[in-house]
Picture 1 (cartoon, helix red, strand yellow):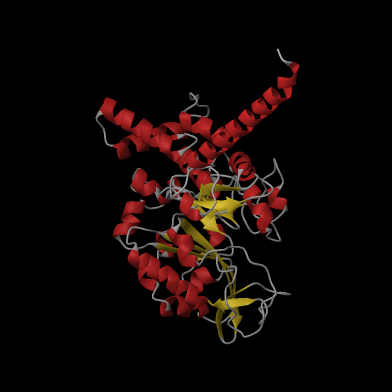
Picture 2 (cartoon, rainbow, N blue to C red; picture 1 turned 30 degrees about the vertical axis):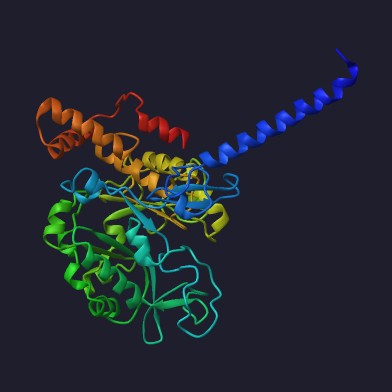
Length: 409
């Protein structure tokens, strides 16, 4: 070998490596997803890159760059059925649904308080939230939605008249005649019949689910299909006990148990009831609500909060609630997560409630298989499975595709 040609050979090899790397990079860019083709966890540059039901999110504490994460719920009724009791399903709840980023001031005073959500109430409902937590106050001669300072609503903590949000709910119920919405009120309204008036003025009384039809002593709720057929599609709970008798508004803790909210309620491995609630293992209440949000909302932390930690808490609270899975899970910034987030949490809950699986989609596989084998209706088979599960304390299951996906999410 001519030693003088050696440098030229090295240069040629380096040039070849550079060209090869450049081509590979170009091929990688060309192969990157875009135009609605990006799937869950794929890198993205805009919402338009992601498939339907996903959006492009940055979560610096959870992953580098931006990725497609879920933005909508799985509709359990369309996927399976709506023919079981209301308490056999799970629903996403948005904590302080009215406290929205960028919500305009209605008092002409700059607002100095926290927000808990990013979307309008209508968008929350359209994306699958079916329970809304609202704080109601006497303010300016009306009922307002408000954070408080020293127990009072102020110009700088107020978000707006409650009727504006209630009208959004009415518009949603009117446009979606098969949907049910639950409102959970942290209620500070003292004006006589103040809530009744604002719900009436918003046009919501025609959807009202009456207290007289709510089950006592841990019994099952009416079938969802019957609630829809009777147009009793709005459940309202108040934190003021006397209003059940005076205004016909259900006192929340007569019908559900609830864990402690705030930072205490996020302690790993612990799930205790809030002081107003009966003990979580009190089966005389048919509904279970799990809160998972901070005392002071932190948007940057919410994508982590709404992911694996949330799922772990649902399992912890299941044990604390006498092996009952939550019917409602309440979070801040409900769309923020590392992947499936609060939507996957609800899929888990519905899977557990309906067929004992880790994901509601696995229930479809099981019910179809049993339907093919037994020639029964899917509804009957689900009901039979629920009855069997209620008398079985230990159930062994083979890992499914969905449970493996869930563990890896």
